[in-house]
Length: 498
Image (cartoon, rainbow, N blue to C red; front, side):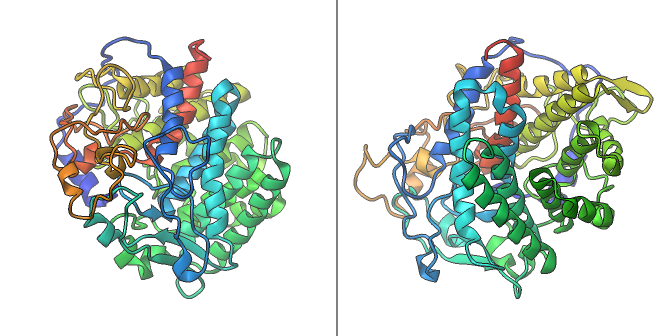
């Protein structure tokens, strides 16, 4: 029941909204939040999502080691990694995207994280270590561990799970350019995180990224074409694989500075959708992220061959600036960017991250953006992003923080198996498949507070029922938190809290 991206949902959501694109978005509650505290918690969340053997440094004490035989059915070590959301499946597509965005958060804003930087690096490494295992065999990427249908038919702690840990892969006969290129992007991004602190590990990551990208490009196809009955409707590749090939090449260009990848982008960019007008950035569609990432090469590093990406990036950014002729973004009456009813907060955090990152590039290049003739400064982009993060943290009509454990009022009934059932310490005996559903339908608060988890968020009317069965609004996910880490680091630093 992880977040499902469906075009029809988007159309239905937008068609039914009584919302505005007002120039002045409302602002509720206190204007300032403890962004440093929120940053700490947003990173801690990833420890609660860990699969595999937990280290002595594990801070989320209600979790225990799990999935210790993952991969054994195919004689490959696939232990580790992250559970994507509130279930016990390791979905490789969102896992890789979360890893990419977590690494990008550290790359852009890690210098502002101070004491949290090591924890953020640990979170990046936990994901990267798993992706190295998933790509250990040439021309193969192991893209999922766990039978999603059978997993979702149970409500079990990951420590107890006895559903099939079936392994799914892409290879030359079952291509998956989308998931493979995203995996290459994640490995390349992580290599940059460790370039100075662990050069040997960094070199290993970038070498693997090159190999995986070559496989993705050579054997083209969407992974959900042949794996649809296993990966859909959970994480179908709706946008195709072209966006991931451009995204992967962009990350390898940044990680290697090799003319090979610059040439690839110049030759293939248009074919891969460089000028696509899709303004939704998330685990499925990477077009907007590629534009912002490649614009840095032009704005900051003066790579003239990539000048067009500045214009493409401007188009995406201008679509989110209220009150300009180019504004295409829908907001709730309370001021929340609203893309989709299912796990909308993922678009809030990813868009906020891109706004802050592009503002950083613009400042470095001493540039502004022209949105339909209206000059938009980096400061304005930062203000838009801050407003979205503030809403998430509690400046909203309900006075509700959508980050668990932050603020006085936050979601208490997460759609999350491990959080909603007693911990192993509290209940050492096994809780079986069907027995666990008492936890799903209980009216009580989750016994384990999943600190830092950000849920899918309120509906289009700024209302949040806090119901565990309502996975669209009550389920957290790694790809919601990953870009938020970078945004919170910037806001904490700019507010003088770090």
